[in-house]
Length: 302
Length: 150
Ligand SMILES: [Zn+2]
Image (cartoon, rainbow over all chains, first blue to last red; front, side):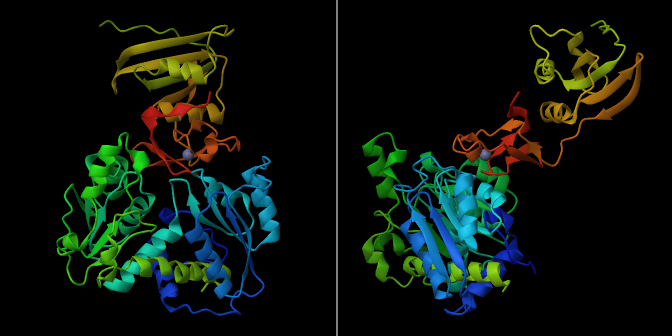
């Protein structure tokens, strides 16, 4: 078993099956405890806003008795006056026992971890990594499907720019008998680099364009964003083809689950919310126990 | 084709078995350009017993430091380095990629912290299949397409 004390959590690539399972097991049992991290301070450095991630890290810390300092967005801070990331991190390590960082540049979190004397958790570095999101996705799948091996998982929509699906697909290569059905318009296919370097030979995958959801255990929806398309008509047409409504959901197995990293912008019809398969709100809520588990492991080793 | 005779050097380094066509890049790494005061010999597309065709670079009076050898290893991983003293090869070894390449390779990802005003030196880690991966942004780059800092 890996000793988590003092560990940085920067990339899902750094975590093997055993480490992932350790986090998920801790997340499954952890309860709020105001004494667990009493006296500990988290510096929450959000160089770009992400309400959901920021609040869920803060909630996790406070439920374990710790406290949170920090900022969200750089307006009015010394960063706006040109302070370097390096100097901000060196300041934060003196004020806090752990740093949670979100930053628009890829590699910023790894750099912060190299520079800081306290542990660093990456809460999103540009288009690169957001490991606690991937862990909460895996936790949600494990919780509802009962396992992470032998699953048939559909990923739908923007598979080109969607960081969450890249990281999730890469993390699933740690498990046995995974089948991926990659459902997207041709212009938003999973990048060949990920297919060839990360997935080929490790998981079975197929790429299709039709919203065929038959036989899937998990349907992972993503946002299709307008700015990815040169013209509006093309965007509307493509977006419309990947909407999950009650009709599309008739293909689903009763025990299948629907996930989405949220916020959604019309990819899932609100009518779907009342189906037993809709688990995206539970998924969002799972961000708190998964982040509690990470904090507990990093501070206490358990 | 008749064997091309490449003259010998007295003291210095011969970089042999460079993939055909890459000798000009090796010269650039060695800082041999317009106005270079020393003597150097470059041969391109000469017959090789191993690879069909190869390039060779010979530099009089230069013995390469580790950083220079690492740079050569990046662009010409099959090259050999021969140290010459008194017209004889006194040492011969293949170039080898180190575990980490620090400050040598440019990251192709424009949104990488190493391409920002933060001034972070690049670190690349060699991987299977002739690839390097950026320690920071995790972008991989094909060894044959790397861009070096000269
Ligand atoms: Zn990079």
